[in-house]
Image 1 (cartoon, helix red, strand yellow):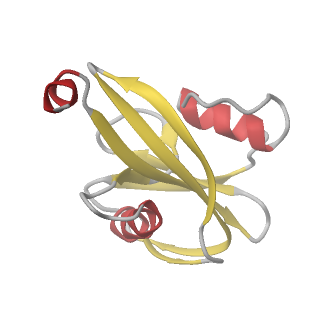
Image 2 (image 1 turned 180 degrees about the vertical axis):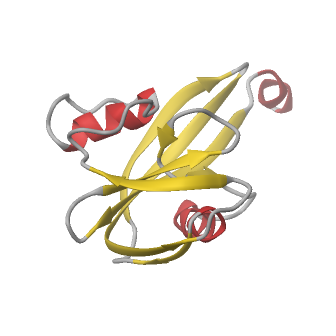
Length: 140
């Protein structure tokens, strides 16, 4: 089992679709990758994904007041020689006090049916699913 873990590691992450009261979704521009994407990041060892996404939002965005997170789905994607598993949550009726920081330089609330140019492929896929343009997929 240990050899398999070394040869095929899995990283676990949590991301959030944060919707304001008007139905627009928060997208973040991270300093370490191009384009717009959902906020989120890694789940620490032993940390529940639901707790991780709330921690990540505090770290990346700042103060977020919303309804409790609702689990949306679990997705997979290759990440180099590893596999990345992403737990995605939705947070409704959000109010955000964004503080630009080292990790996230900018945010935008966008129409889920018409995300801005340079939105990441995985983010575009999830948005297309929630507005009914494409069927759900298990791949990020």
